Image 1 (tube, rainbow, N blue to C red):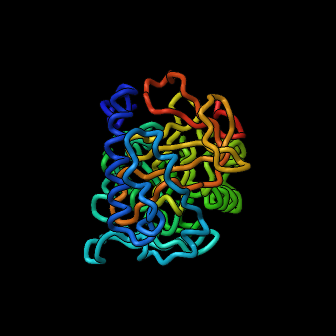
Image 2 (cartoon, rainbow, N blue to C red; image 1 turned 120 degrees about the horizontal axis):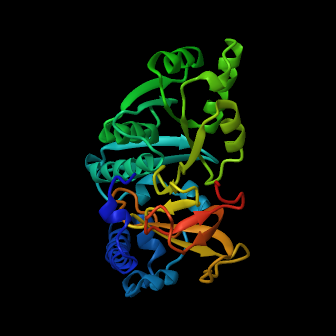
Length: 322
């Protein structure tokens, strides 16, 4: 199912034209408004973007850069223009700030992602976790945009198990550790996890792949999909599972991806090679992110996808989902 068929199925030429327009704007915005990128691009490289491949002229942004820099040096506007501030601890405290437009775009991406996993108007979607997490808030709004019934489960596993059964919940959104906790608590209540009404689990992971996916699927007898809930990227919606199980589609209207060699910084252009994923956000307002090295090992799949989406796909070292 498509949430935005016009965008998700647009021609590759039109998509690249859109990416170039947004890339020029994103780089110009970052170099003018962000103290961090003003310094990063001091050699004038920001003015040299004439085609998508020119992004290779720009320096990388790394996690150490983010952790060593005040979030206000990334910020492009006064605090009065910020709608939301969130802080998540990963390898360190990462503060993210969002404008109203940033949140709207995150919700748009997640709406597409949930639709691809089968969420629809008649779905009952449970959200398990601390709702002070902005990514869970965006998921709630995305499910409600679709028209699904949302159930906020919190982090109390005892009540969560009961709510799953009471509401006939068919879709569960949660991090992989919390899904595992839910399974354990169901067993503690002498409930066989596979008898719960859940048919689909969407796991939010700090990595693109989820090594526990098979175990969760076996215990709950469900389909399990993964979303890359990167703290640094500030959204769980940039990559979403293909409806045919053929990797993860990249939301290319909102980001530009590159693969680089693990041993250095050379960009990989040849198909079928594994490399480190580098992401540039094309529409971030509050906190731009240009050529961010994610540390994720992926392979790009360029051939047309059977699900009908034109977005390029990424596969992980763990292989495709089917």
